Image 1 (cartoon, rainbow, N blue to C red):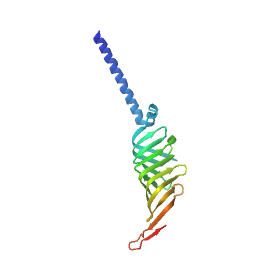
Image 2: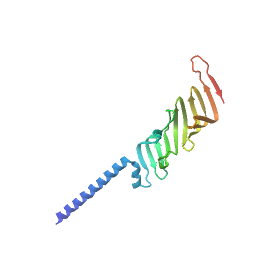
Image 3: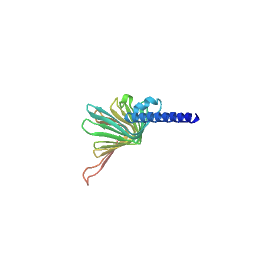
Image 4: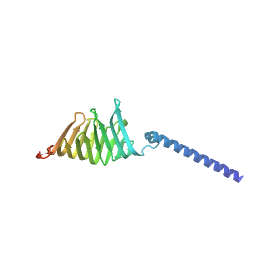
Length: 198
């Protein structure tokens, strides 16, 4: 009698373990297909994602994308804290504007890029222009990039530095609001260099 109870108990334990393993496997498969569904089972818990990637397709072409080594997604804030972010805007002329930083926060209400903040030695490349700053803020509502601190740049052979740069993605204009210094380098060897401090 005792051995029958023990056998029954072992069969029930094995069945419970089998069901638990199958449920865990199913949840893992669902999470791999769409990690956002996992958030439904774990409300209030941040989701850790390796090889983070989000993008937006508009009118049949990619409008923007954000990539990172890993990210922590906070559902309540609709924010992703991204390590080593790479933010790319695909321009109508076929070019790209790319910004990279050490860390960043991306705000994605309803899956739409509302705002992105990149920090720590931010590099920006667009066509022949190269920028370097400590902080970059992208504001979707204004379709512009703001660098609130010091900015160093090289555009078409002209070096400049200044503070509080705004770059309008809509009309490709750059505005610097303080402490601007410009250095123009001659393109031909042997010609003089001219420096202009403004």
